Length: 442
Ligand code: HEM
Image 1 (cartoon, rainbow, N blue to C red):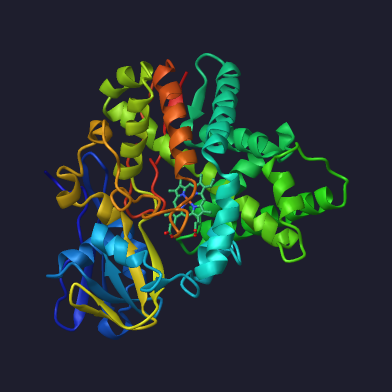
Image 2: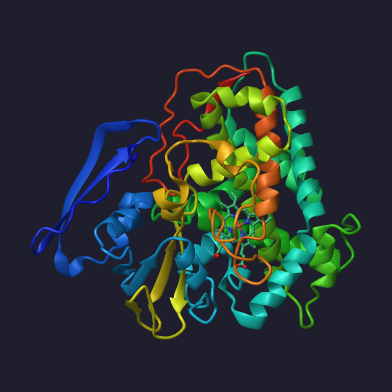
């Protein structure tokens, strides 16, 4: 078994040499490497974290005996943990809280201000209950059905021989289907711009520079747009579909003791923005079906169970969220390692999903590993772990899995060619994606 990433070199005297190799998933690409020297006094790990992406924490962990990393991030003390027991520790509110843990650049792009992600205790549970009362299993299926219908419409519109970038097309298809499912009115001409903005918010949260600027502008634009829709429902000038999320957000999440139009907009965005982010997994699905074509036949037969197992393996195998973070509530210890009060506590999701002790052959793509068994609450963690009703685990997992399974079957049934293109997936880029976005010709 071969790790497809190179981890940073060990420390060298007072200086540190960091070597990052960019690797593709299925084969190493030796042609690119960055080497730089930093005076030790400046060595907070923020720059290496940005440069190495998914390899950062696994690289640091490999240098420790205990697997617990003591480091500095954004100028603050940080302790990083990995594995099912670590996840149990991390998700215990007595150990780790979320308020004050999410950096402002992430709030201003990915989550929005006052989002559920940043709350603790009773406030968090109340907000999460409201989320889950809407995002029922039926609603997840409903969103997936609308997305599937939008996919079928898009395919029917394709001309033979037309080239399609799967990532972009999937973002538009999911945007269209999700807006229909949650009752957000959307003219055809508005679709490409909205899909671009929703993608930009996710694409730019973990990086400085132009991608981050685009993400901030996209969030501001879409919060204002959704807050206006909420206001229009509240003043009666817009009639949303009965029982839709837009109606619920505007009428049930009322200003008195409830949510302002802006916070309702943040909540609405926290449904449609991550749903559209499933387009990353769809592009990875294109990559997986190209790399391991035997799974196409199996998916075409669509026995339901295999499609779901395939969706889980795509979420486990391909990178998305590298790690999540909180703050230590009190002085504590884990596996004998001290965690000071107030320190950042990081949970290495990518490392967990590629832990050989847990998966045996983590760098083999094998959907069969998920057939015929239950997945434990702290076992597969691309969207967090534990119980979504009581902690911060992503409430959108059933929605993501339903969309992914449905579109994977449709993609497997589609007749297409894969032209020459760059299918490298850089583990330095967060969130990672095939370089070309996965181009196909119908
Ligand atoms: C590409 C698919 C998705 C990925 C990779 C993803 C990933 C994550 C991760 C890693 C977390 C943080 C968990 C934690 O902090 O413990 C999270 C939280 C969250 N996700 Fe997702 N998610 C996805 C799809 C969705 C969908 C489809 C929805 C809603 C429809 C959604 C809504 C949320 C919300 C509201 C939270 C905050 C939960 C809380 O703080 O209690 N996500 N997601």
